[in-house]
Image (tube, rainbow, N blue to C red):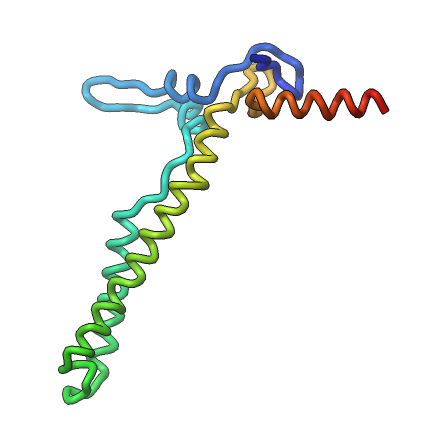
Length: 150
């Protein structure tokens, strides 16, 4: 695999995954991380739990404020339909967030992790670049040959 830097043509390159792993330190049961390791970290997946709890609590407070403004004999306060609407008001945003996070983690996040796994950093100039996989390299070579032949 050709891992020379496209900016300075140096062969002193290192995979981002290696930089990240080398910077993770463990001492006395505590883990520490170097700045280089932090900058070379893989992309993080979108969280489900914390945003879902925040959204739930925000809509719970909004619902409580909204219901407190209604008269006591209102159908939204005392009927089964009103209770169902309140539950929908609480859970639809949480479910929407979970679906959004799942879609992101299944598509975009996986693509970013794949790109991170093929990324290198030049020790000479600091450039971060991606090494194309075999199929991409072959198509790039075909384009170059076609450009030269013209």
